[in-house]
Amino acid sequence: MSMQIPRGTQDLLPGEIEIWQYIEQKSKEICSRYNYKEIRTPIFEHTEVFARGVGETTDIVQKEMYTFTDRGERSLTLRPEGTAGVVRSFVGNKLYGEASQPTKLFYTGPMFRYERPQAGRMRQFVQFGVEALGSADPAIDAEVLALVMSIYYELGLTDIKLVLNSLGDKESREAHRDALINHFKPSIGEFCSDCQNRLEKNPLRILDCKKDREHPLMQTAPSIHDYYTEESAAYFKEVKQHLDQMNLPYVVDPTLVRGLDYYNHTAFEVMAEGEGFGAITTLCGGGRYNGLVQEFGGPETPGIGFAFSIERLIMALKAQGKVPDFGNQLDCFLVTLGDAAKAKSVELLYQLRQAGIRCDKDYLDKKMKAQFKAADRLNVRYTAILGDNELNENRINVKNMETGEQVEVALDTFITYMKEQVEGGK
Ligand code: HAM
Image (tube, rainbow, N blue to C red; front, side, top):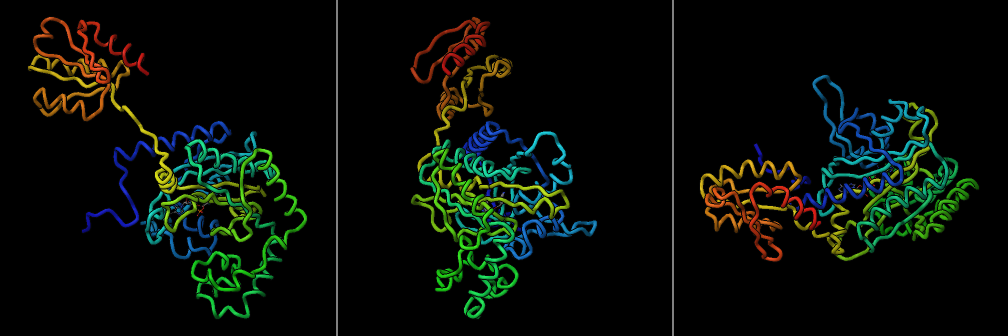
């Protein structure tokens, strides 16, 4: 039996977890400003949800899913992404029938993909994502883009680029698809076996192939931009106009196709541009998926969303030196000398905590000097010192660790005194 952590997973320990909490808090707070509400769906779903939702021909479904049969002989899959489960829930719970539309949701939680692990590519990773269902107004595309960029900007990231494309509507895509087949077919033998399979099933995905990236036919492949219907072109134009209105910078890249099958119209990625990233530079991906709700048996409902992994966001924050100092985690440490003082400290600590003060004490029977050392290591703001003598005389010493100043306080007023100090110093 292996006691090692599985490849592509990680433990998040104290010291590192603070940055996770900070990102989650900030992202949720921004979502609430945009009126997106949290949804939590199961970590596993019927395999069909992803096979149909994400698309049979995608790498995710063909190569990367953690699929298992449960004891009831059902095929279940650990979610590789959040959108399919959210749409399944939207249909199952008839959220489309709620009075307030569009339905604007956000989620965060672990996702699972059997990929080759490397920096920024995990087998279990945490996505934060949003989905807006029920509106085909280009303004909501712009809203979703503004939301994700706000999260990045407010966390302090600057070296990032919003890359935008439109995949057009069904008609545009079909015309483009035929053009792609005609373009690649005569030389498809020169492409990898995945691309050969993709030619008839999903030729758009050939453009996304990493192995054949350098093939000359990739450079000359027909662009979706030449196949937009009037409606698709107008939709894309409006999305861009809204971004311009908000002064949100973006670049249009006609080769951006995304690796999931459900997209149409707006598709986008946020890329990291700075140093220290290695091979993986995509921080976030998303787009519009107007047919997906119907695919799950719901009424025709447009949708758009994005997801980013917190792992990659942290890489970007670290690379750009934007991880804040989480500062003082503890207000007070109680140092005691003598058995009576030690016993009394249990009660004092409880009262301090009841009063909202973050505090701790020694539990290893350490000598006084070692207790002070522990307090130092915790970087506390105050140390309270209680000996048996002081206890007898109903007093306690409080040392401000920043100024070095020490005052004697009557024990009866200690909790109130500490509360004033801590609150006053905030
Ligand atoms: P995706 O592009 O497959 O899209 O993934 C979105 C983001 O999840 C990526 O940009 C990356 O930040 C992160 N990610 C993906 N795989 C890994 C991995 N192995 N390790 C670490 N991070 C990873 C989706 O998942 C869509 N559901 C996004 C969406 C929402 N589209 C519409 N709504």
